[in-house]
Length: 452
Image 1: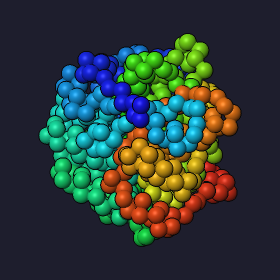
Image 2: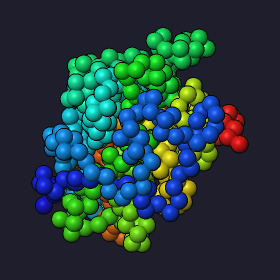
Image 3: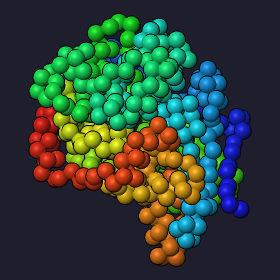
């Protein structure tokens, strides 16, 4: 058989999200207010989030029901397919079995609608008229623009400036669905004006764009803020990926030895891995879960586990997470969605407790893996997803060298059909590798907030 495609019926799509906080041995520390440094309460978050999302943010209930209206929209592309990568296995001459969950079939071409749809739904239910957000590579902005259109909400997206210029088709995509797209840092917010005054040529960062989007939401009563990664409720919504993958693998009579996902803020890695992490915690399974990040933005592999601001300006809650420092300025790598200084507190806590692993890879090696994958599996991966592919290939090669036939599952979190300029740069030898030096990270970490 040259290809195995494992599909589920609509009846097999999850009707509840899995909340890993119900099973974690240690929960993340409580977020702190950026001004008072005291624990954040629901009233503090109510200025930018609807109450239902705030409840999900702090819940320790194991299962949280997916609203029927959200399920109906999910059915436009869910359940997403699970593939057995037979051709890639053959090209690598490996005894490993390689599976990938393909989230690029969504309307936005990535996993991001899994959370944009419920976020727009809950905001609509709360009477909100407009959502503001940031986006790196444009995948999240694309997903939120679609979700806002579904529910009749206005949408403004602050897009990291380097990606705004690198990925014009993402901007056009968002505008097609009615969103306003602003290159960040911009002159539309006080935070943006301050950044531009210090560095008129700033490439921007996710931390900067978050600051602008939060400021935008905070000064308008009709507007809330929506975040595409990092926060607990976002990790929760993404677990539909792993829940479906478990059912699909059961159909194939298989279970993974290794699970792999790229990791910026942590949402697609959490989505594919958390339902299996539950087995590791509650049943003692030996599954390895590997979060892969860029060597240019090595949050888990070189960062510090500490309280830090989630944004550059320090106006959002202080989170206990792995961080490179909130004013860390990553280079303009083409995996724009992974250029974030911090990581999900849930992912960070699990890594700190040794329940997951983390590795980093350079972008040229990742594009090399993406091209090999595309030439064998006929899907062009997003630059972010190429990091997971790189480590999946590396692990499959290790299986060849050791003679062990392990089962590898990775999340192909999005397609790269709107990222062709990045592939053009790779093909023409214009990509440069950059491994962020420890000295620059140390300098940035000196500015962590004092929390008592």
